[in-house]
Amino acid sequence: MNFGFVASLIVVIFAVISVFIEIPVVSNYAFWFAVGAYIMLAGTR
Image (cartoon, rainbow, N blue to C red; front, side, top):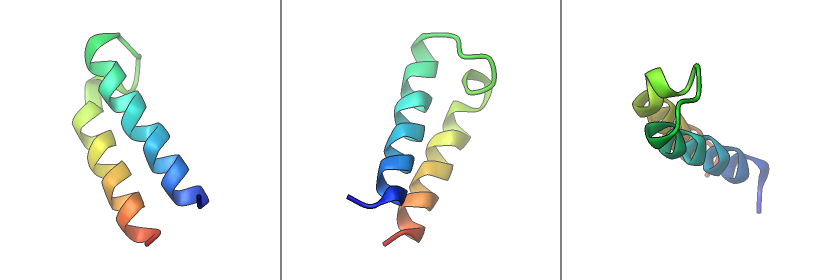
């Protein structure tokens, strides 16, 4: 596994969890965190 894949996986997990549990910064921008994780994943391939 490479670092970019693991980092994007962690970011998208935080984005999904923040929909159900309030995480101060991530909850307001959960969609954009998920989009950013996808862009990060695409950039590491």
